[in-house]
Amino acid sequence: MAKILIVDDDVIITELMKALVIMDGHQPTIVNDSLLAMETARLTNPDLITLDLMMPGLNGFELCELLHSDPAFAETPIIIISAKDDPRSRERAFAAGARDYLIKPFDVDEFLERVKFFVTI
Image (cartoon, rainbow, N blue to C red; front, side, top):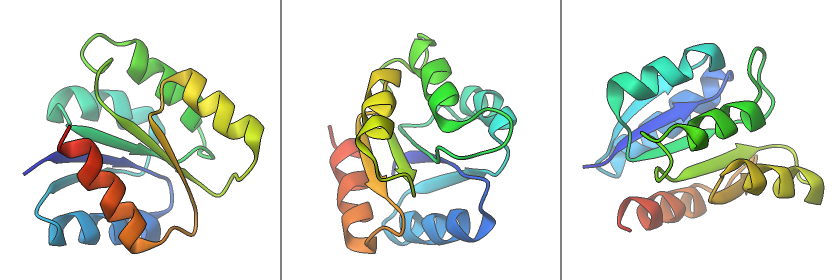
């Protein structure tokens, strides 16, 4: 069972993702406030992190950079899940340390496949 940190300010999206990862046998932790994400990551030590890009406070790019630069999470896979579907956002996300990028609305099966891929590495 992998520990998955889900960071998104949209409660509906986080509840959907939570249900999906529970059904897949994982332990989710939800954070709807990006400013609490680092503290929550330190408390839960996740095996995988999903981040939205467009959030108040710290945006997903900033949070991804913070997580990736922290030695405790430098090797933790980060999947960006965002409505931003442009090459510049993708490039910026990967430069910040993301390992994958999914577009909202995402396909449920594709989401679960990506989760499985990163928690089995």
